[in-house]
Amino acid sequence: MQHCPLCEHTTTHLYHTDKRRAYLQCSACALVFVERQALLAPEDEKAIYDLHQNHPEDDGYQRFLSRVINPLLDRLPVPAKGLDFGCGPGPVLASMLSHAGHDVACYDPFYAPQTDVLDDTYDFITCTEAIEHFYWPKMQWQQWLSMLKPGGYLGIMTKLVKDPDAFSRWHYKNDLTHVSFFSRYTFQFLAHQAGLELTFIGNDVILMRKPES
Image 1 (tube, rainbow, N blue to C red):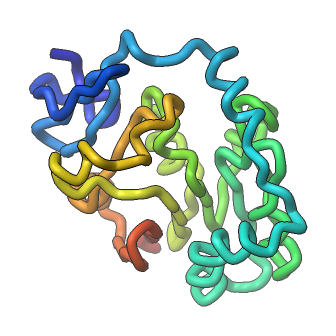
Image 2 (image 1 turned 30 degrees about the vertical axis):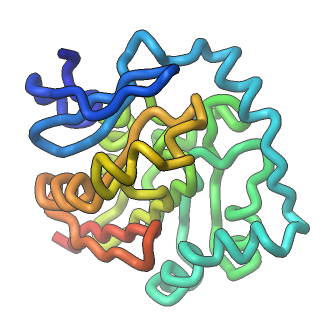
């Protein structure tokens, strides 16, 4: 079996198989992840992302993003400095937060690949519907922890794994760019390891706060 790409635990087991891929689960952090040989090449991955239609003027998409934006706005001082990690081709979330008075940088390996923003520190970092695309989420997780200031917030939006039966019928896994699937337990594991305060909001929003000291 393959090592966990999040916590690097060496014990993993088969969680589910379908016609296209096999999915493994880590015995330590419970991350469900796609077998490494099924990962897409970067050009094939980007071709799928290019089909996404998330426009700044789309009221429905703005309402969707507000599920993570509003809890952050309730907690952040104004102005705060943030990073939208995995912003995609249209940085709608960054625009919405900027209109609320915050200074927001963007990073995306395909659409905003300026890595200098990863050398800075931030009062908040957002990642909406992107963490499930990470091939090696340990790398991004460690980046976030190093970039987040004491007292800062991580705001993540992703659909959560429930159990093997629900997973077998889950449309979310059918997107071939979705390769890392988190559960509540996985985020609890990460928060405990890093000493972060954890809050779940609804079914798919996760807030983590880095303590002041």
